Image 1 (cartoon, rainbow, N blue to C red):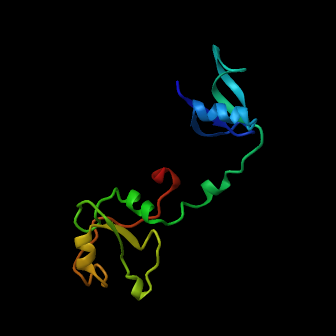
Image 2: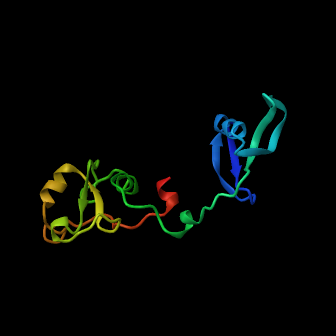
Length: 145
């Protein structure tokens, strides 16, 4: 087992880290061993399977709203596929062009191949007669991780 579960100070699960990262947390005294493998040690510590943070980490931000917009996030959300033709996407297209007030937002951007992006140009999909195959949506944290 190479992954180690990290618990918050209130024993709520946070995430998993590598064994190496967990040992670094123990050395820095950021965490302590909560559960360990029997009869196995690394230095003065038993080999951990679960570590608990010494101080509480606030995680509300992850549950309140989704991630901020980014080009990489749009590509990841759309599976690196063009929203117009389905081929491999290399660019980001604004559904409502920026010249007409379109913003960099999850609901206004889609992944697009270079050819479709050039063909659509400074028009809306309806004006360019290029219907979207997917509807842009704001992703949740789990979809981008």
